[in-house]
Image (tube, rainbow, N blue to C red; front, side, top):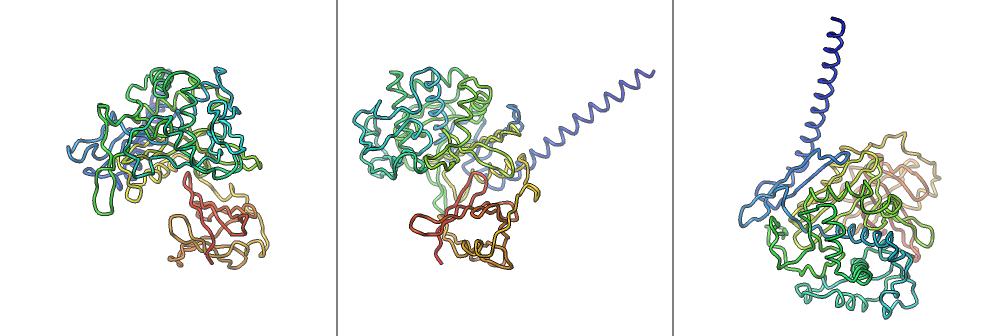
Length: 458
């Protein structure tokens, strides 16, 4: 009788735990539904979204149309252009070759391109991977006369060679598609096969990513979404751009399920060693010792108080974003068939979803420092941000306050962390102030994996 009673109690506890877990899952699902459905509606270009924890999907849903003319719905099998998420595959391919002893990350690119005009620079594979080469990111994609022309990689590199350098290698970070095009060609030179074949055989087939492929405008791809843009009044078909121009910087197609396979393989060290994954995802260091958030194919970010690795992508008619919360082991993958940043901001949505899982900042997490009035007043002024908005920083009662210049009634205190670093009291934005070489006051305003940059105007 006693044993029967114990069994009933144990069964009740187990059922209760299962029920609580189900309620939490339903709560998360309803919150995500609410976030996404505000932006992605039934008859518009849509989104495929997958959220997983410990490698297991918690949320897999689609919203909207894959083709507006045919009224076809986006499905979980829908194939999207993933844009610059391609860079993760290119970077991992380079690390695979490094582990095989086929290259070194400190190899000078002149080892593979003897006639490359480096102008006295030493440009290494490492510099290409973390966007510190100084090679301008301008490619034929941004040239209206060339964007529809199919080009071979050798032609792309000849185009890139003609661009002047932005800075000496290793001194600054400047995002460069050109650098990743060069990396793709290095893969080909070393392996004697095409970039497409290397990715297909060493990643897609190995991981059984059966719905992923190298992009080709002419090829018939089952379940491929059509791409759109928004002109301020209505949706239109996205302009034609040859996918050959994206190459190793943004040419791949995939699905949300395949991209979860990819994330799980990275976490399990199926493709590269743990030490190389850490190198790829933990940011990197400039020559002057300053840390930058970009590693090899990933940004290292903070979302609330959680460590995250992120990357987004965009091509004509498509956008993508991927966030992985390291401690929580939560992956958020989103793909959309609309390059509609003003109307459908995929980065903003995925960041909001990430905050549902990421540890929140509390006051005790913030190590506030005391600064003199002189040190605080140094940053007072109005800054024009690169999204054409203005933010004003003012000093009031020995504290800095910030506000949108056109919304003076909403002000937030800036809590000092160092002489140059502050956080809003609402915990939504972090500020880094600096003075440029020519004496201009500048700021970087960050929220999750998004940053705005500003220069003082008065």
